[in-house]
Image (cartoon, rainbow, N blue to C red):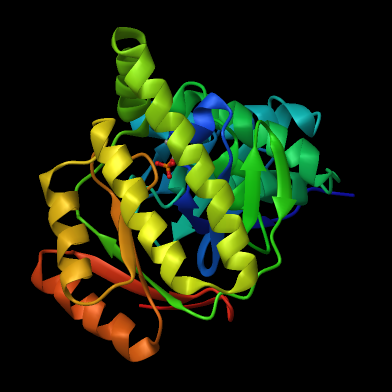
Length: 318
Ligand code: PMV
């Protein structure tokens, strides 16, 4: 078939439990946010005198001149064109995102996944979800160093996922609650926070190992709570997880302030989500009204953007 315009998409995600500890083989739970989409377009062309271009996050130009923060997208293009058997293809690539980058919402994995799918679509090359996962991980290695794979999996998932040591299981729970997502407006570097936890592991192995193990057991216990529909203990575990993550040095004053504001406004629990050092916090509320109260408190405490997510319905409201 002749190449044609290819489209691909992936979605944002939040980590409910298990960021950082997942890197050490403990389990994590992540929820795809199906209505916050990342879309990519790939338009192949024949002209050998034209260079492949990228249009993304307000930047547009020849791919070879793309700023450093696009390195993982460049890798995604390289691995996808190679997989398609067109390593020298000329393509105009663009991405469009409905959620901010570098806020722990999985934007790098979502962009890579969407671009890879768009390129494979343009050349009508079929790929299994596992093959797409491995291609996305190639790009994530540029963004994160040694990614656990959680983001690559969750940004392509249709349902909440339990992820451990590369193995994913879909979780079938109906969480009759609301999650408020609040963006601190601060860019967090996952590569940096993962590196800091690694250094802490080397300098204080015992306390660090104990904190990571506790984060792992909290996650497993939360799976049982979620399946049983016990919302209050899920909230309490979120707040506990935040304390442990703060102890590992991946929180900061603005994130702690957002967590405190959410709890003060009546949230059942709150924590940072994703790599930390900035990015988002998430708070749990049992009704839409409570969630809106928590949302207002988060905005008053300095959140730059908020989203309400009802996991049972897969709904996200800005
Ligand atoms: O910051 P995010 O959304 O990319 O989440 C990273 C999750 C970590 O556990 C910190 C790293 C990883 O590779 O799983």
